[in-house]
Image (cartoon, rainbow, N blue to C red):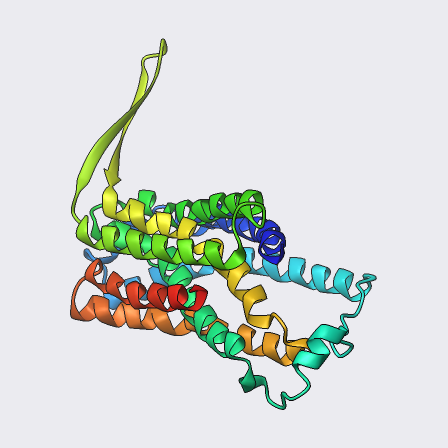
Length: 298
């Protein structure tokens, strides 16, 4: 049931992720469309520098607040009564199975798990952090596209809820991971081949005469749906990778945490492919990553 329990924690994480772009977007990114037009207009270099400094100054107060909250949280954590986790005392089954193991690299489920975590975090960050600029490239205004990251994270929350309900009652962790990887491949390919397909969607409230027409882009929708595909991956990969490590669990967990570096490197590759090709063609970098995750689950 580890994937189920990690999914519960994931909901807390991603609900904050849904809310924060809405708050920061309203504070920091307000009026960006007008700002872009003005900046690209008649400003000289000194005026541009002054305007950019003013824009950058908007983030100071939100980050000070976050820093204060984190310090308070650290103090509370320091004095909390959390138990120590001792993995050196193994149960008899694990001890006998690992009696001949002398290196952490003798556990293939961990070594491949680190690779799976690396590419998973990479595709998650790409799906969340590129969707705003991708929306702009598809013709959306910045005032609208700045909220797209929240849609991806909301899809992840939905995925966590599905995981809580179905794991392990209906799905094993590895089967859930396999299905998630297939969804990632499907959504990624659909996002690429539907680029440029736009609709106008009208929402109306009966008896009030109120209606609003919003643009809808299939490709952006499928990028947001990658959040649904990505949700169960961390909760499934982590317990599968450390399963049976016994006294090697601590160092194995450390290696898995190092795999988060994929979130720093794969977006750079996406950006480079955007420069060479186009924003939608650059999403091909996601497909081999999901294939690696599918192979690991298989």
